[in-house]
Image 1: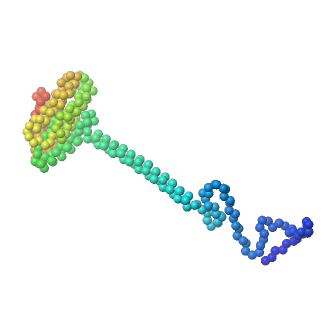
Image 2: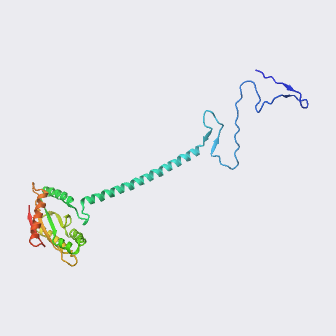
Length: 269
């Protein structure tokens, strides 16, 4: 293929084409590929990216290996910090849940005013104690306790003084019972002590006297405080239910209270 041009004689006899061909001369045959000019680096300036000629088949920027490594390292550090923070939050939440569970369990099984075991925990403990007594062929005792003058103290000094007496007696009772025995508040001015094992008859008297001493150690406004106690002992034989032991101890308590209080009665199931 050929290209024809018209020529003129203008200007100092030099022959020039009548039109400008532009930045690229026309050549015959296949067109030569364009060569990109690389930008000259500035002296002393860092070059974070290597520049290559744009390509219609892919991106025009290639990330250096050291930059890719630094980016991956930063991403790992961010992920580690995030997971560490999340783990710490989960541990804190778990600790709160455990504390809440313990708090609710205590409210469910312990008396709020006195801190002693409540009726639910006492009944559960008595059932287990009877089972141990049957297996070991031993005996247990349940002591029902009533503060003799609580109603009078409430009427004279107010209910705040009565609550103070209940809390004080609970502290004394907890300190006076034998190690391993369970002190509980049955309700109102009534308390219960579950004692096990009972190996000798004098153990029963010792338990009752400890309870009377605890009551006498809690005077209110210099007014003496006494208690009535009914103690039921059971040898753990088959057929005896927790309710049988509790009912006997309750009957003995009211017999002692009817006899003037500040005394104890003991009997076996």
